[in-house]
Image (tube, rainbow over all chains, first blue to last red; front, side):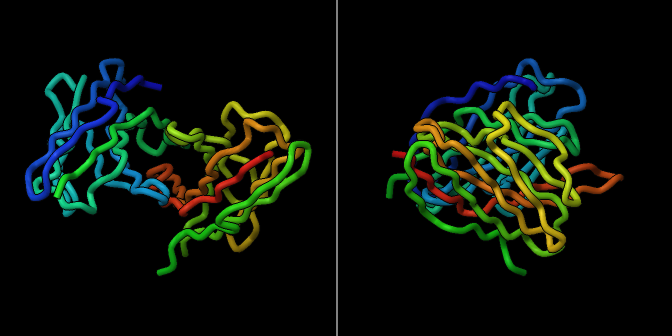
Amino acid sequence: DAKTTQPNSMESNEEEPVHLPCNHSTISGTDYIHWYRQLPSQGPEYVIHGLTSNVNNRMASLAIAEDRKSSTLILHRATLRDAAVYYCIPRVQGAQKLVFGQGTRLTINP
Amino acid sequence: ETGVTQSPTHLIKTRGQQVTLRCSSQSGHNTVSWYQQALGQGPQFIFQYYREEENGRGNFPPRFSGLQFPNYSSELNVNALELDDSALYLCASSSLTTSFGLGTQYFGPGTRLLVL
């Protein structure tokens, strides 16, 4: 399993963009980069995933470096509801399990 | 569409006892995975069930066991509880297909277990 490095915590203001970085320098060529987040008192929820190209969905955007050794989850306009722990997870397509690291605790200030 | 539900929400047990946690999968999903999340840590994979058979296991001792039922609901059983078993236990359901493997995992809210 590829190792990931994420900041322990980040802070941002409501309605501002947030860029959450993840380093995954040992990622293999077939690993997709998945992001999940865990809101307080809830189980993790899927946010987005990608392989090589940048990806967008209604929740966020995922920017993947050309060498795939890092990626950035972008929340375009943070709300208080986005306060959560964000996990970056390299994962072989269809792999059996998710391997969670420590994640980044994101605080959003009103 | 009903999401993943777990019961009970909280549980207190004493060391040496046995516990059973329950999970109801999301409609249409054939796979359930169980994770243990210690305080301040990310979830750790315990095992997965597919079509009522164990389909992979993480680094957990045999006193952690499970069942999956024909309606795809599931149980996690832990025998001989230890203090370190105190954690949030999460189940996640998903669809496993031959074409695409395991899809997105949908997590329940978890059961918080305290072992005294």
